[in-house]
Image (cartoon, rainbow, N blue to C red; front, side, top):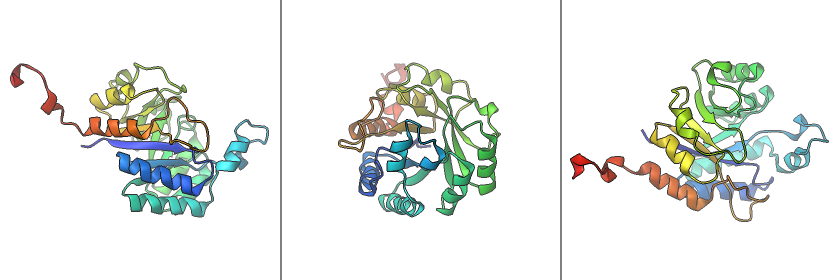
Length: 234
């Protein structure tokens, strides 16, 4: 089974629809299977929150998310959105989405999980702050191992995956080694943040470039047996 590669645009578009569409087109061509955005609304934050001004600038209307979904369809990739509040779940479902992302900070929130269950969308849940057994999803979810540090330390992906609790890995580390390690030990979904030159805010070190996503896609598509060096191939 091919590994699903989810690239997280987050709010790097800064509220620019043309830039958001550029993210979709560029990373679809680079080999991503799914492009992910966030549905967070500034009105959920206090006005003195450090993130308030940026969230206000970068939030999209419901109609714009529908346009981004259409752009993903035209580019041959899946569209995915992170929900942060139960009220947002219905809005995302109304777009026609069959899946929804839940961040590690919200993974243990009961009202959000119940809203997702009622929506019949399949949840993809990062578990950096809450283990799968600490959520309200049971096994009716795709669970991603996650180290909730930005950037995250390296050397943990394989160990987390080998616990058998997770279906994939959500990455915040610098470079590709954690993603590659997770894939080698069986991750079926990989998620990672991405950047573009001249995006709306300063790129972060853990955000992957187009070149890195191309390299990762090539690695994921390799047939390990063709490069196997062992006594049977010699």
